[in-house]
Length: 411
Image (spheres, rainbow, N blue to C red):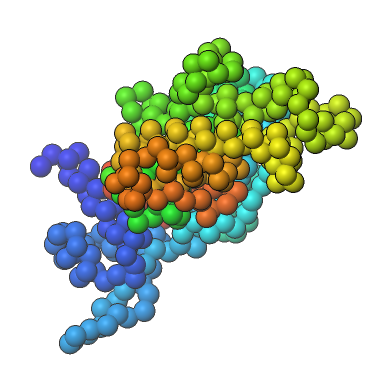
C-alpha cells in the first residue's frame, strides 16, 4: 500500500473510532473492535493516539462476564470548544460550545446596514475573534468554526455565492477566515446546518430520512437522506421558496408570480396584509400601524393580531399555513421521509396540519410524522457549530490537525 493510501486509511479508521465513541460511549476497546471489524491492535493504537490528543478519556470500568473489567472510553467533551456563527437578517449570532453541544457563551452582534463585501468580512472576522477570546478564557482550544448563512452556498469552497439579505455575492468566507486564524472553517446554508443539528441533537437524531423546513423572512428545507445531507448537483436542494404555488398569485420579490415566498414568507405576509388594508378591509392592524407612528407593519404584528382574534390576520396566516402544507405534501411525496421537522411561526398554524393531511395519500399520512423543533431559537447557531463538529467526527472527512491538539494551542 502506498504511503498516501495508508495515511488516508489510518485517518478514516481514526475518525470512525472517534465517532463510534461519540455515538456509543462509554464503550470499551473490545466493543469498538467488534463493531468496526478492526483488529484489536489497530483499535488500541488509535485509541492511544486519541488519548494523547485529549479527544477521548478513560472513564469508569465496565461490566464483565469473567476476568478483568474493561476500561470504558468516552469523548472528552469539555476539553475543547467549537464555535458556531449564524448570519441572520440584520446581525450575527455567535455560540461557543463543548463537543457535546453544550453552549457556554452566546453573543449577538449587529451588521452594518448595506455593508460592502470587505466590511462584512471584517465584521465576521471580529465575531470569530470575540468567540476565540471566550474559548481562550475558558482554557479550551478551539477545534473549528462553523458558519450558517442564507442564500446560495458552495460548502466545498466555503464560499457564499449569493446572500440575499446582504445583497452580496462571491464571498470567500472560508479562505479569508482560515488565512487569518489557521483553524478549520466550515460554511453551509443555514437550513442545511439546522437539519444537521436536528440530526445530532434534535428530533432527527434516530432517523435516517427527514426534512427540516424553516419559515421566516426566507423559506428553506434541509434534507437528510440516509443520514447524509442532500445537496443536489448544484448545492441548491431545498430552495423551495420560489416554488410556484399559484400562477395567478401575487408578485414575488424574484420577479415572478405566485411563488411560495409570496404567500408564506414574512415579507409576503406583510405585503398581502398591507394590500388588504389599502383595499379597506377591517382589521386591528390599522390601529397597530397608527400606534407605531408610521413604523412599518411587521409579520409579528400580523401574528399577534391573529392570536387576538383579528379576522384578516387569521385568514392570512391560515392561507400561509395551507400553502406551506401543500408544499410539504409535495416534498413528502417526492422524498418519502420518516418525519418533517418545522421551524418558524407560520409552521405552527393549524391550517398547515390540515392541508398536509388533506393532500397526502392515506397510506403515507399514517407513516410520516410532522413535528415542531425542540431546539428553540438557538437552532440556527447550533446548526452552525454542528458543521464544525461534523468535520471532527465524520469518518468521511479528513482528520483534523493533531499536532495542534497536542500542543494545546489556544485557537
